[in-house]
Image (cartoon, rainbow over all chains, first blue to last red; front, side, top):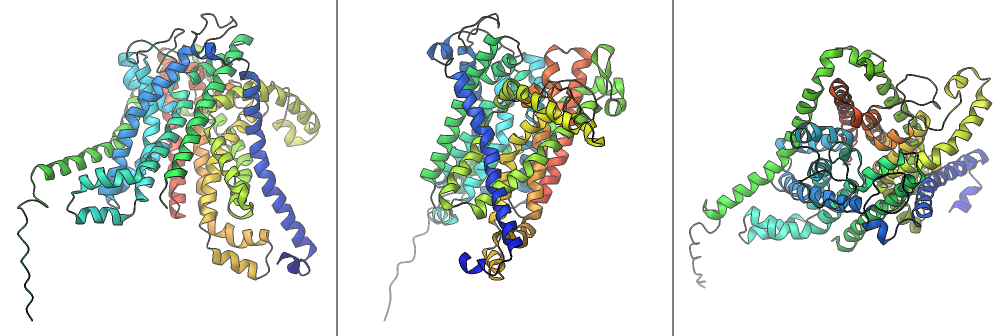
Length: 287
Length: 323
């Protein structure tokens, strides 16, 4: 078709069309190049540093000292993110159930939906300040305080993604269940949730990935440690993201190396979560 | 002909809708979900109250000067937030100026231009851009990007020094840690947000409108201008506003590359500071009034980003797109 048109489209119009196409393709390149640079640098700098010892050893007491050790941060990231997930995902899914199964288009549901959007826009550093003022000032810096602030960040994301997943469940399923005499709560637990599970899980995983990479909410809430702390409630803790931020500001090569290693570890974790989320969403979505 | 039908046996009383044990559990489940929904309201309320309360000493100490003064000198108990508001706005604007054309281009690529087999890789690219933690961008920015940019900034300021306005904006020397560097990193971070919302909006353009434009002999670019843009302007503007909210609240990457000096200066290649960045950088060592003032900055940032997000949601909502 375009060959027929070529004769009738003036040269200027053709050139403008060509220029726009080039601009659109190059915008993709402009986004891809920096990402490629970041990942390439991470692999280049981090690959020589990350090994089993790096992932499990303690952090050197003096940041000047070369040598491995991000074990406490790996453990801290897993524990804190895990605890945040355990709080935010059930609460978020229940809230989404209210929005989609009970509240629907009602006024109260609309208000909650709107507030969840507002909450999703709250900067992560403000969440950190919030938990600092309501929790840390009373109970001190602990891994749990960090988990609380991450949970606050995750909650609105989980609510909105779970609601979207619930909306995709065909209403015929609910009606069929109701026609068999099941109450709404039973319908939800035995019909709606299983049907929506892949979408809910994939949305939750994306929220976990986002939380695992967050630094700002942890800065004032978890403190820091050099040796692994397995307790969330007792004593300060640390995390990969917080270690990257701390080490990146130090003028010592050894500290910067550890920052690269921690960054590679963190991004591997986050990309893996993102990848699994996509696979879950794609593999199990009922169309 | 007679049809004998047995009358339906009366249902066991209460099997379907009795207020018995099962009915009670249904209602309590409803209340449980409602309680979780209301948690959002409670948390937002608590954020407002508790942070304002802790920041109160700084607000009463400085009064309106907290918002209008450009002097931030913790050692002299002078807390004016203006330099940080300035830095926040300038870096966010730089980020948008760079990110908006790229994001709209990527969204058009995904909706109208890309060959089918490139669509999935490019939408994965957008996902990965969004997945990189901000501290990783910050690390890369401060160790790799900033020193490299310092050389480029030097050349740009040499070239622009005879030009009146540009010479002020691009004046050197620069360490590479600057407002502009922060803007560049923020642009990377808001690109996926603006791209995914713009793409959703572009996908809602009716095929008939596109076909009509082609039928009138439009080139693809003319079709995009005639059919896609007019239909999706509001949605894209809303997406940009959401990106703006994200850019203003972004902390860690900015804290590492912005240079951390509280000043209002037109020099984009010079160092500055933003609200979120100064909280991250100074909070650890701050005590007393200084700490209250930093929390006060948090309250101010909270208010500004909420306002921006509200406007964005309003615009996106009117465009009929769920983000």
